[in-house]
Amino acid sequence: MEQNWNGLKSQCMHCRACGLCETRHNVVFGVGNPQAEVLFIGEGPGENEDLQGEPFVGRAGKLLDLMLEAVGLSRKHNIYIANMVKCRPPQNRDPLPEEQEACAHWLAEQIRLISPKIVVCLGRIAAFHFISPDFKVTRQHGEFIEKDGILYMGMFHPAAILRNPNQKPVAFDDFVTLRDKVQEICTHTTLTFD
Image (cartoon, rainbow, N blue to C red; front, side):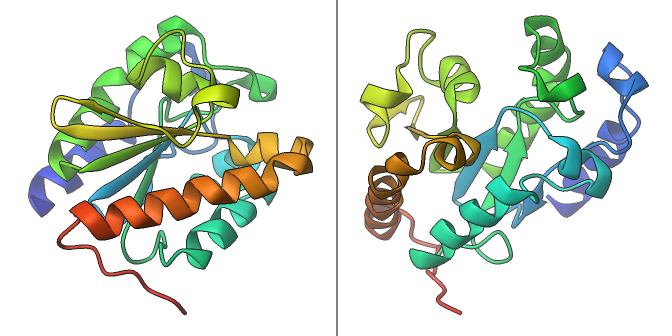
């Protein structure tokens, strides 16, 4: 798997399939354990992610890390984090359908190689794509939907929680629900509390 993973990453780093390649600083392939049973998917890199080449490294990423650590999950040990698109859309706008389509094969191959048991969709863009085009994050967050042997869960995007801190308690409840499901079905995932 390591050879396939490294080859995929190397190819992705040189991608020029859509116009986002013209303005990027870095391709943001993903971060974490590529053998994780839990995969988090966001919509696309923001400014900090584009500059550092890693997903969720700004304020939203710090909040995500705190919530993950509180339930024993960590990008260093037992999850993987990727995005729908690997390059930053200008002004952090939503990735356009054609940009998502141009990038879809990279994420599809990541999913194939990781073979996760649980996929967590952070925000509406990822949830629309993987769960349902009429998914409502405000109503359906924290629910598990099984598709093709994988459990999908939609969650509030950490940036949305920063904009509306009243959502923090209910968002954290989703992380607790996730932890419980990980303990139930993920046989190779050890929760870590640093």
